Figure (cartoon, helix red, strand yellow):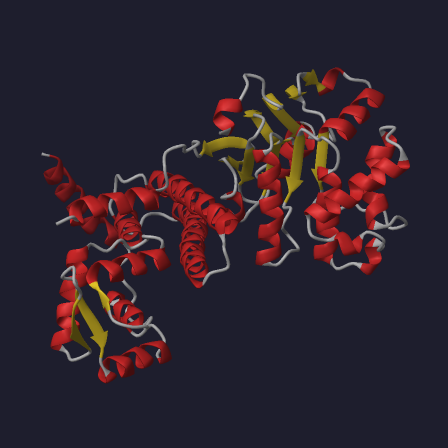
Length: 204
Length: 254
């Protein structure tokens, strides 16, 4: 994943040790994806195994330094030159939840949408507050810009989710109107009964 | 911080406000018994689909329309109890209003448009102009002072309209889609100005259909078919991110 390339990018600026890499990664991403130092060392181990980094000695305090290899630099270049693939969308828990909710009788889908929208809106307020602070504290450094971009990615993503939830709500309303106008299709009955049964099992 | 400063008295209180248009079969309930308080230092965003009553809510709050039932109270004054002249004075002194279509007077320059409500209040022309220039400065459009609305882009007109709403010591700012004609970074700087006004003690209510803009507010209320259906609570705890990071640290510490 991107931690690998994130570490390569940091090492491209000169040899560093584990704790240093962690704090620099977090400074740029505002601890949005917090790293623990164990993850950093595991990733460094794999990068070393793959010949992308190499050990570069210890300092007086015993910190193990790592440096990027030529192969590592080439890999980093490839990463920047290649778009992040969107062909295999990551699993989205909310989409899965709603897909299940609309097919299982007895789930109040509107309430699911409603509750999620309130929660996402609060998250969006929270990110925006952080952004206000980041803007106020902006010293013009590259690290500040990096953090701002990451925050704004979260903001736009959450906004998109809220818009999608709004759309789900009107889609559901439209669907409810249409099904109210039509007699229920008999073919839909057996799976609905099965679903109801399994739900009862789940409760006991 | 605003939490400590929050006195018991809201700047705006919509006290079970209803607004009905038409009669009999054609009766439309634009708002149904909406109860909403906006306190000093607070920015409240109103969201909802079109036709949900958002703009009606704002026109009632600004005294541009009257409720069929309930009361609108601005800084302790019940708007429905005022005669036209007094109502106009309250609207001018206490309320800054940003209209969706800006409502700038074409024959006046930006600075004159902004200074007008202050001059009507009896402030001297020179002092009013000084305040107008300061308001333009706050919105980073000082260079527009002597331009006429027809010579400005939509986004520039919008920012002038916002400057007009912020001039003087308005305690209540009402804004209808204040970022509508603005690109995303300019829209954001306008919201930052509104936010700063509220942090300095003003109260504001903003109608928007964009979640990203509503997120600058302390509270977001959702309207549907004239009813207030949901509301985000004020969150005073630290951010989600900081908490997540702290948890990860705890877990990750060797």
